[in-house]
Image (cartoon, rainbow, N blue to C red; front, side):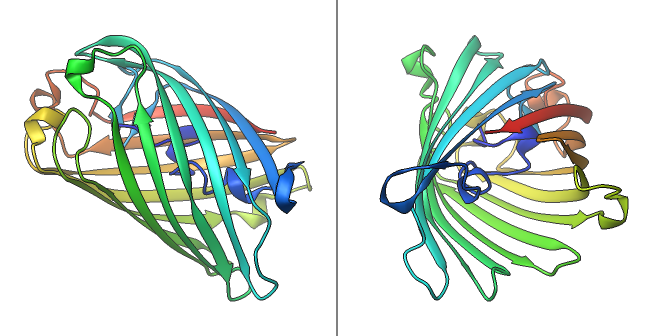
Length: 259
């Protein structure tokens, strides 16, 4: 149950943001980028993946050069990792592999992504069948004063051998340009609303076929670092989350450095 994301899941899923930033020159006219994050909780779709404990997360991405002069179109590959802690298996690690294609058009206002992610949990008991994959479609539009992004994930057999799963999420962000008092600082607020549906929900660890989740937060970028604070919650009650507080409301802090 992972996002392959940067700090607090703001850039879900991996490959979308970091693969856009040209950092180090790579082969075939492409570029490499990397990041490291420290967060007070690793949250996916509102559910803690670290038993509400801190996480250290790192990523490495490669994107090709744009294939056309008319609009941006490129492919990307990525690797993402984090520590985890599940009630059923204890502490461990997660490593995700991603690939896909992304385009920007209409003066880069429109963004479209088609991708896939393979989530793996090295060292976790094989009989728990944690490993799974997602196919992902993302569509976004930049309105200047705010941006909106919709994402659909589909897994033919999700986490814990839980069968087909659909995750729908919308994200809106607003740059706070009036707070940019010099070129080294920028601010934005954002909010997300999503729904997770799972065929065999008991295997997944939720009390019904679907639940809602939401998050709102503030991100400050300063001197090459992104600082974030977010409030997140779900519609799952304590008893429906394995009698743990991992689905309850909480505030998460994080910091990310992109290289």
